[in-house]
Length: 317
Figure: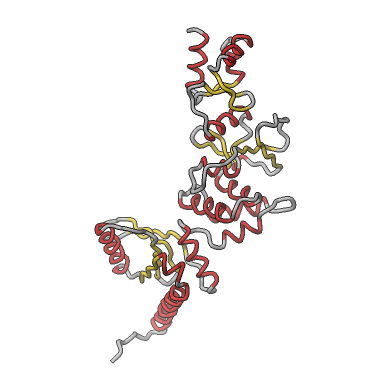
């Protein structure tokens, strides 16, 4: 196989990318390589890494190139990591990396953050690329100028996809909190209303917290005793059998409405009280939401007190 085909074959296994060490290993002399670069066959992506001219450049390609060059003890950082995890965040305007503080000096055309707080738990592999875990990504973003909305999207998206959890986030925050760690206070505040799976659910949790009501459990699973189907509810208040569903769906079909009604009926037949609130309720009529939840909690609490005292509730005459 000639030199050109050897280079193409190696690049094909690496998403169209070549390291300078690849070129040397394939027996290509510096002169041969430089002629190919000058001819435009290979284009520099970042320090020490080239792409074939037919491979389109993108932030994902630059991310792969940077990680290839930096080696095993570095990964994607911050917004770049969040986007690579395919969370609900925009594509990064610049590709960023992170590594331990004691690593060798790097060329300055890569944006590389370094840290003393390095742990094997913080660096995972996804789609062939090393990057910070969702837990560490959220913590790192809190120490940057990232918006609260973006950090909340990372937390909520990570929880929704089971890539992190609130207990995991809290434990890792406690591990890393200390002098020199910025953003911990802001992150703790964001976690107060985290745990839902959407912006609307986060807003509902904020309403409950500000109203000094007990915090509900999030994303609680119930199994139907008849058909064994699993039903996940948005929120459930512990010990009350009150569940809350918040819905922001628009333009749902008759079939979807039928499924929702049957699901609600099934939950209610199992003894649960189901409260439902729309986007307009949560965002524009907070007093109604809070009053409805408070009344339901008080009613269930009163019922439990009567039953525990040995008295039966009689219907009004």
